[in-house]
Picture (cartoon, rainbow, N blue to C red):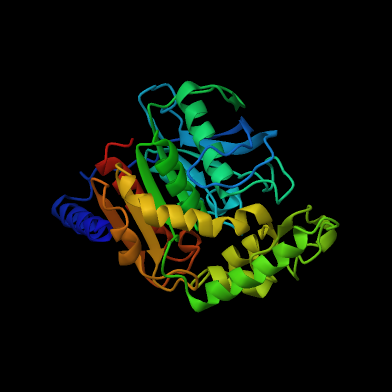
Length: 364
């Protein structure tokens, strides 16, 4: 397992450090990190294995390219494409808080990342919430993969191309990564954080049923924005048509996602809770069905990361077993951590383990 490997490396490093006089020990240097705004022009269409409807419109997807400054001139570089979960945004991976900015931490370890807001979130295009779906989000993911390979996207400076693309997803972003890999291939690795097709907790089931009920009100012909949105962050009138919150209120948002976070993290993320497109919510089960039938078709290295105290998902071994066709499946169970394990006190384990997994699989 990845976690064992990482611990072994750490022990070896400590042993070596003790054997070398302090005056002679090489001082590690942290590479300069750059962050570049990027955007992708995409079609909200669905050619995935999940049969669901989308409006076919053209939208912009906004994100951030984060990399070691000297990495962008190498066309053979790999990039990891990060997508967030149902209640978050790009901010999950790119939170401006020391020690908790995943993509910056990865750049400091030598890896290139692109994090982005999915359709329906924050700085990306906002289709009517019932007119996109999990399959369309997977299709959009593949469109971004193709643009990263070709360099046909918009950037604040240059548009580097990438020879290898890894998909990483948190929560139902992991489901979307799976569906994109199954439907289109075209990826070189898959890293799933806090997603399981089986193993939902009773609390997760209750929240899903409640949010689905609120979404049903948004499918009514005379629905108005905010109807059935619940008592979450922001005024209901600020919620677009066809959207609702997975967690009904700030308390549910924090208790559902965190188990061991610093107060500064909780303070930073509380106002960031996102509403989600109801079309995504209503088609999750269709995506799960395809995962259960076809995840063994994924034939690239896989990493599965869970929090040991996740209030939403448990059973990392069950999820790992579904990737029967992958050449390798590494796992990390982060101690004392919840659904947002990358924003909790043991976040450095997530950073270290993912960097090691990418390096070990030549995805650099």
